[in-house]
Image 1 (cartoon, rainbow, N blue to C red):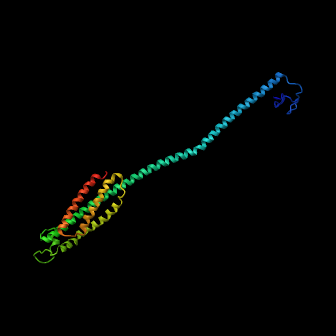
Image 2 (cartoon, one colour):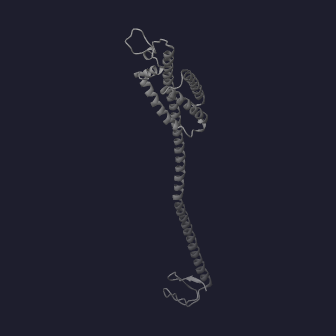
Image 3 (cartoon, rainbow, N blue to C red):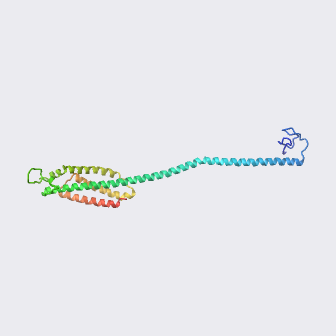
Length: 261
């Protein structure tokens, strides 16, 4: 059995029916072979047209589906790009942060060395005057710089040296200018200590310089303590002072060659 189109209403019907089931058109006589062939050909052509249209429709739907898939992928692409730029941003941020940390370390290192140099210079001056007052009192040598401290405070025309060098040293340390210098040295010690504590865990290129500045710090403390509170005998004080100042200068010069610019 084949399908043909009704000659009257053009709707599909079987070639075996006697009348069209749609419009009632009589088909009692057999359809001529040529006519049947033509009807079948028309039916086939219509089917092919429908198949082509279905394929076009399917092709269109396939394209639409692909577009929809691509759109679904777009959020993932955007998220991926955001993650990428976030990672780049973090890398840049960390690099900037590391540079800031490095610069801060360099600044603290420079401040520590500078403060120790200032404190060391003041301590050198105080210990120099301490030694001279101490010595001139013992050997009764006049000197306009030490006389105000080594000589007794009397109304006598004849100048008399203090019988005890400790009296002369106390007189020097009670002087207004000396008090200012010693107070400054004590403050300097506090500041240097705070900065030195920040220099732990140095960057790689500061390793050698860090070892040197720690050694300098130890010598600095010895010299400043000697200025604040002199002790021992004259010869021992003089030797310790000279050795400490020499070591301080050597370490300072060494530090200048090791500190990154």
